[in-house]
Image (cartoon, rainbow, N blue to C red; front, top):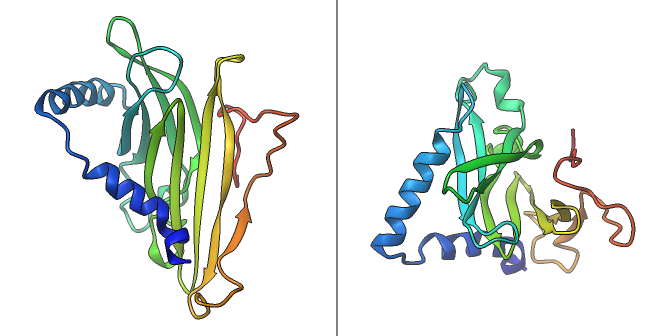
Amino acid sequence: MNKGLFVSTAVILLLTFTPINAQTLKQRETWTKKIESLLPDNYEVRGLEFGHLDNDTLTDAILILKSRFETFEDSTQRDQYRPLLIVVQQTDKSFKVIKRNDHVVLCKNCGGTFSDPYEGVIIDNKTFQIIFSGGSRWRWTREISFGYDSSISNWVLLNDSGYSIDGLQMDTVDYPKNIIYTSIDNGKTKITVDQYKGDN
């Protein structure tokens, strides 16, 4: 049961410690500098992951921002959701922000006792997944996934769900409990990354 609850964290650790060669590392450093030049005023990088997000062969990126002021104890930014940017590489090797959503990435204080719930982002085969966890006695996880839909040239919501467990009863048959944060009707309306509102 614990394996089911924390499998996403294990995946992130596996990806984090996968060896990469020097050439790839240098390329990532170049890409990172280009993307950092796109940061809005008063924002810093909270998360950055590279991968293929659309139908071409160029490397794109998911960029998670955080306010420079969210570390201040009395700042209202600690309770504000963080911007998520979809950054697509152009044929001239530059990067361009083509989508932004301020409702996907949970705030610094949204994790309860464990504070910042953000755990990471994974890109795989034109999909991206943002992973969170938090709570205290009641622990919870949340995974929000979007995938590229070439018919509308946009990313649509694939999953918004997670688990919840009672820390004092985590070995009972009643836990973990599945949580559906956003219901998805795959046969009808598509929720694009532009339209997703999450909890706010």
